[in-house]
Image 1 (cartoon, one colour):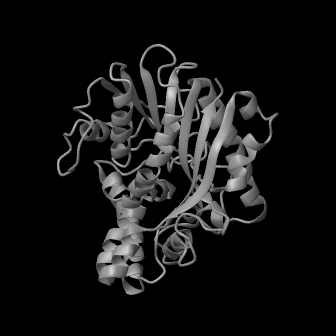
Image 2 (image 1 turned 30 degrees about the vertical axis):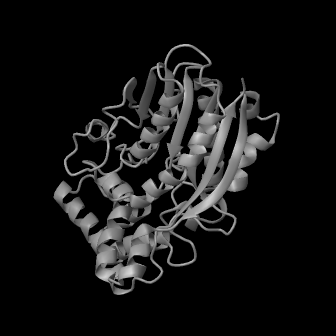
Length: 372
């Protein structure tokens, strides 16, 4: 899912036309796994408190495909307990998000996508907001339940370029500290904005990328590091003369994977602005969701099929960042050829030596309550 900022860095977007959710099975598995936490959070609420619709938000929704089953389950659960109350579901993401695909999927109009839509759910009203979760999206005290998955690792601004890597997981010293400071400021900003939007008694359930207690993170759980592979293949283009030094350096993800302790920091101090705003942490734990493409490879043993399914899931969310690193003076077909060459090389590498490649998901799952 996505809601990266574009304030001071590349404009990042998930790939369009349903490509993102069609090629991110792992992201959907994470959301499916958090369904129990969502229903538990809803069950802890006074569902009949307040007036007007029961307002739900999906922050950083991308094309909506990974969360649609979760929302259908949650709304079915709610409808059984409050049959007459209107329910609103607002998908939020940046203005350049593929909202057209999102609404076609929600209404069951996207060709080739099986499974139930939300179109037939009585008393449900769907909306979209093309705004970042780094700003207030809903009026004060109007939101009853907020959800976000795999989105809030994107920073509000790029704090620094990394000299010899594409991601903060490979940064050290002052470079890494710059990312950590930005991430902690952003985390407080996100929480304070949600505190304003939530009605008293409201809930948030968040599933964010993290660095867990074992030092594992997205794409690294002991095997080949996905971000190391990104760096290696991108630098190989520079060595080959396909891209310049500045283009190589500009490929820095505006992301940071917080530790569990860093996620907890605003909640553990009773005097923090987040606690003073009325938010309390009800649950917080990490979990690893194994890469489904690597799991399939372990069953069928076909390295070529693995590479052809695995690399597109990486491409679905990373392509725009690498594209943005290229000199815009290059003709678009030339830039696209470079990007194709980059991912083709990665795919060939995986097919030739598949062991250790996997985009395991490492998340921090949180349930947060607003006082009231």
